[in-house]
Length: 180
Image 1 (spheres, rainbow, N blue to C red):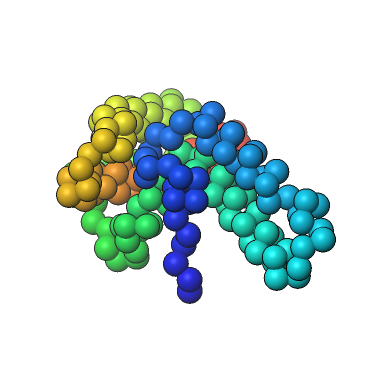
Image 2: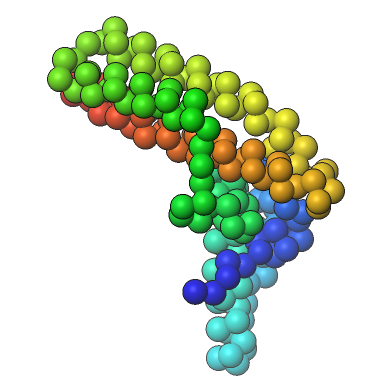
């Protein structure tokens, strides 16, 4: 499998969790025009193929970097931090999630809007706490020297995995809400 292209290099940007959204969009549109197949209709077949590749790369880069969750997964993946089996979450968090899942299983058998609201409030509180805790790491990442980035990336990895767990719980809650 070929390595994922470096979208930050492609857009001439530093690796960051907080890119300039407007600048990113401008770069995407500029390259979209530059690599538009209509402007290269008279070029050789080889050149047309290259332009098509660059146009696709531009679209993929923009889709990935313009979405915060996809951008986070992309950065973690580039650093080998989303490989299966290499992810351990703190036991206290896993206990909290297990507790929430048990509450969800009880709701499966005995629907209870008040209990549903309680689980939702707990998930929201956990989520807000996670977001507040990671924000300084995300905002400061770009300014870190290269050797200081691995611990920051570890923190982002833990955050990302926790958010995925909470997302699954939210999805279960949404299914309950749809049934009632």
